[in-house]
Structure formats: C-alpha cells, structure tokens
Length: 574
Image 1 (tube, rainbow, N blue to C red):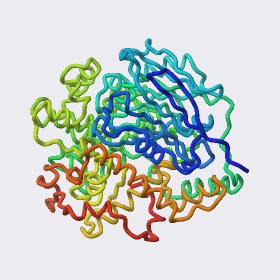
Image 2 (image 1 turned 90 degrees about the vertical axis):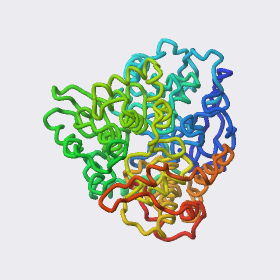
Image 3 (image 1 turned 180 degrees about the horizontal axis):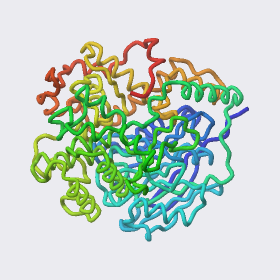
Image 4 (image 1 turned 60 degrees about the horizontal axis):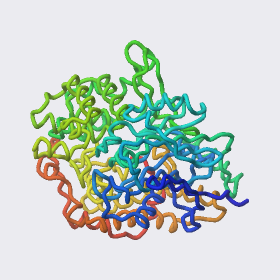
C-alpha cells in the first residue's frame, strides 16, 4: 500500500497567503529537526535578521507523527535564533504535531512579516485547508488566557500553538507553547533559542489545529508497523520506566555528582536539595491531587506531572528537572512549591525556564537581588510583561542580563544559557555544549557519565549528537528510549523498504552538517566552539573539576568517525 501524500504548508505573513505543496520525494525521511534544518539551510539567508521578514519559522512534526507508533508526536520548532544568531530547533510535546500529521502536513513554513508590526494573526488548519485570521483581540494575552479564548472558538478536539507576551515583545528567552492532550493548558514548551520571539515577530499569535474526523496515518507495511509499535510500547511498559515519576527525580542524582547548578554555578550542590527533591512532588499527588499523565495522544511514558497547590487547586503542569535546577537551586530557592509558582509564570508569559533561571541568577550574583528572594523573582515576571528595561533584560536571557548588569560570570555558549547538567564533571556533555550548532543544549546529546577518559569524549559526544538528531527527526520522545535501530525499522515499515544502518546514521550526521554549515554561513568559526571562562576556571566538587578538554578534542567532534556497532543501540535519552 502506498503511503498517503504528505504536504508542506507555506504561510507568507507579508502577502497574507497560505499555500500547500507536496513534500519533495527526496525529503521523505526528513521530519522534525532534520526537516527544519534542511529547509533553513536551503531557503533561509543565514545572515538575516532573526526578527526580520527573511527569517523562517518552521513547525515540523516527525516522520512518524500521526501514526500508531507510541510516543511519536513531538513537534520541532526551528528558525534562525535571536538568542544565538545561529540555527536552532526546540522540541515540544502536546497534540499539535499529531493533528497536523493526520491532516497530511509534515511542516508549516512561515515567512515574511506583516506590514503593521502591531497586528496579530492566527492560523487555522483543518480538513478544509488553512487560512489566516485576525487575532488583534488576543494581543498581549498570557498563554493560559489565550488558550481559554481559543477553546471557546474551536472544538474540544482542537490543539493550539501560541506565543505569550515575551514572544510578542520579541525577547530572546521567549518560548512557543503547545497544549497538551488532557486540557487546554499551554504547558508544553519549545523553550530554547527564542523561537517564541520569532513567532511574535511574524505577528503570529496562534495556530489552531482541528483534526476533525481524520484517522491515524497508515504505513506502507501496515500490519508489520502496528505489530512493531505494540511490541515497542510493551517493552517500555514492562521495563524499568525511569520517568514514571517525571524528570524531577533527577535532582538528587545531579546533586550527588556535583552537577546541580547552585548560585549561578558557583557550586554544583545545593543546601536545599532535600526540599527541591522531585520525589516530594510525586508524593504530594496523593494528598493534593493532580497526577502523572501523557502530554500527547499515544504516549506510554507519562512523565508529565500535574501539580496542585496545598488547597488542591491546579498550579502548573510538566514541572521538570531543568526548571527545579535553574529556577530553583541556581537561584538558591529553597522549596519546590515556589519553583512550581515560577514555572507557571514562565508558561504564562511564554519563557524558557532554563534561560530565565540563568538570567535571574546572574542578576542575583551581580548584587541586584537577594539570593532565593522568591517574591522579588515573581515581581520580575510582571516587569517582563510590561517591557521595562529590567524586564527586557531578564526576558532576553543570560547574555542580555550580563550586559545589563555588567556582570562577568555569564554561563552561556553561543549566546544560550547552559542547561542544568554541569559540563565540569560531565566533560563529554560539555563537548556537546561546545560543538553543537545550537549552543548549550542538553537535548543535543546529553551524557551523564562522570570520569570519562579525555580520549573518549569526542567519540561519545559525536555519537550521542547523531543519535539525538535521528530521534528529533522521527517524532519520538527521547524518554521512550528509541535507538537508531528501532527508528530505522519503523521507517522501513512506514515507507515500504529497508532502511539500512548506514542510511540512518548518514541521516543523523547530515542533520549535524546542515546545522554546522548554516552557522558557518552566519559567521560562526571554530573560535565559537568554546565554553565560557567561568567553566574553565571555577572548580566544582571534591575533585575541583573544571572543563579542561583540549581544543583538539572539541575539534575532533566534527570529524566523522567510523561507525561502531554500538551506535545503533544507543538510546536517545540521557
């Protein structure tokens, strides 16, 4: 059986036009990050203003999106980043990618810019096609209020993508929010790289996707595909399920290995680790309500928590380890309950919790705010929404806050704040942070092995970056742990021919090369593949670890190695 035709949806905000076209046959196995990176390389001027009309904003589902493959409906959001000035992809859960795939669309490519910078528009996508609609009445609304309004206009089945006030203000820390499966809550964020700022610069306040009566996509080898999906999902459910309590349980482990950022990474352990412990969040569910759920249809991982306050009222959802680390330990906040409040504010404004936590910690270390002052932290979000000078600095991210304060310790790579996992004890992860085209990003290739020999770091970082690029193109969530072998077999049944190990590895490597080439055209050189001075000189832990991988080791990450059989059994999750 032939696979149903797949389309690209092209939206021109200058001409206010929407058109669809067939996905090129050569791009059959490109989805998610792989597809957005290829489109950006081929169609976007790498020297353009990230907030100007020449930049492209791409919403891309994976190759397996909209199918029966479990946990395969992730959405990639790609553009030239206003935070880094290079290529960027940020990934989110929720149902929009699933719904777009069922409607026949692999990606939405948004170009241009409205003539009126104050105008707001929405994009409707349904079984009849797609169209732009006026959305001025949503201007400046926070994300929860935006989605409540949209829920009144569209069906219960609809899913939404939107940006908040931070995106409309074009701030470098702005995220893109997606709604989850069980509610209208915009809690699934493509957080990193300022993708929300690009969305705001396009004048695009929301995308509403109505799946209607569409069904799951069928594979060319349908029965084999279904059987593989059932086997894959059952293997996860029968296994250890490391994310059954969510990612928040990583706090204690990170603290043990001195990789929990504390007080703007002055230390790698927090004195508040026992009250920031994510296990407490899981334990609170029995008393307060809430629980664990799947953020998108077909997910078997169910790592997303729904967090209630002490009175049993909904507070936030998907409170993650990275948020507890950056808005919690890194700012010397004492209790997870306070971090949950801050997480909700980030979601409301459409801000990356990693970038925002890093920015506030810089403000604190610079002496502009007391460590752990939660009330003052909360007040900052209203400054961000109002667009004050201080608010724009914090909403602009770590580097912008460093410029605003004049503070010298700014833990960022290529303009993007370092995520929770510290590169000083995790040197192979540091190699990923340094060499990834997207700046410091744990999703590019996280390795949690301490004490790795220097001579192994380049090989392991390169392999993990290849594996994660393959996963990001498939639509699979990293947490279900797909290997390249898993993905190539799914692909084979999907398109009706074998996909070899060499082909799937080449696919992952090509993503990295596309991204490095875009950055080269944007003006990046090997001199940008470095970690900040504070990571090289300020020690953490009993071994006084600093990041000390030689330049030649970092350069070796970008020289392709012979394929090892082990590559094909590496899981995408850290």
